[in-house]
Length: 500
Image (cartoon, rainbow, N blue to C red; front, side, top):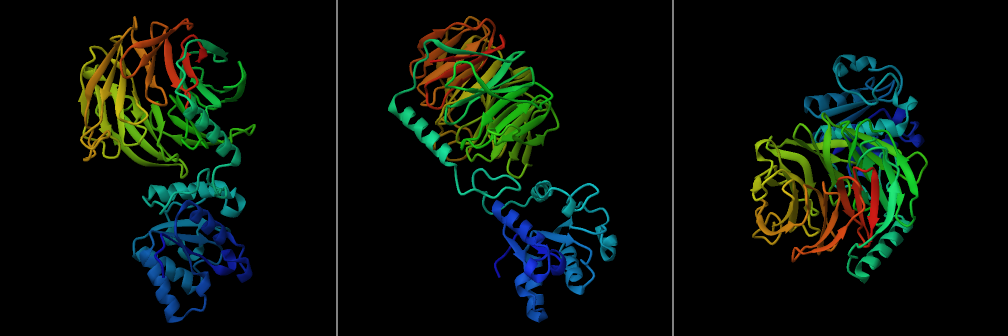
């Protein structure tokens, strides 16, 4: 018998397969868990009983990580279901009761289930609540127990939805067109304002492009998120509302299927099926106001950093936190994740405002300090190949750091941050630099700041190629479209400008 991560214990006549007299609930839950990548043991195929059957049940209980018991009116009344529960309890397995129907807890198990968390929460059994709602609770409960699926689900999966075979045809076509445009020529050096987008009632704090370069998202101090069609002059596609604080970060997953936003209200919202009038929303709560958020390249994990100097890694399709670590008080909370997902970087805080910090995101260390700026570091940005790091500072300069270690990449062979040599210092801004970002091919940098100017730089020589004027207040954020054709800037003047 193959080892299974999850064992399901149930009364066949209540919740087993319909052909055996049940209502098929166990089969539904098994399918849900297997879509996520878990292996599940269901004993319905061996109902003949006897010593061999008993040994198989004992082996399944001993090898599983999670024991799910379906609490229906008849569960625990026969020796088989009661013995299965006793074996799991004696083996100290992680036990999750699911209240299927009838009174809870079942009479024969009242003393054993007292104080145990059950699914679903509330005063209604599984048969009287939305199945997807209950499965999301189950997913979170399993994740909190430290049990991980053998493999991730297919792209686009969400709790309660059948796992798709792959990207939609329209997404495949759009990404192919974007890649063709990107490889046809080098990124355009922005030279003029193509569009001025007006909708926010307060400062624009963050912007991001979709992977196919067709949509631009903006978030502001007005607690609203706007989605814009890059092909239209000034037409917003959609407004997303729900956050109770300023929006500090927005972004799409690399596969383009999921969109996330982070807010000072302490929550991350995952927006799915944006084409619908009312998108599906999943909320990941934090314990403090958030300062930054980034997607991992696998498209189903993201990292956040909050004002209490806590870095959290989230599994978005489980809706659960996987890791949590504290960073030192002298490290800033506006972090940036390297495109390869290996390292985090941030400016300084407290007594080390002018320092750039780099560390391994998986281990939390060792911390590498990059010194050179003379005033506070306000923004950091990784190059697309993760080998260079740009830092923008209140001292009016941008520094480009070579982060390639002994192993040829950031972190080298040993996983620690390597390199850290300052290759270029860019001068030109007349006031503090608030934002910096790389072109998709890594040949150019864009920067903006308190002087209301956007500057475009040659990343190899440090020469300023363009000076873009138009904003009437500080330039807070920048984003280059993945196809290299557009540069977007967001400002305290409540507008977004698209340059090309």
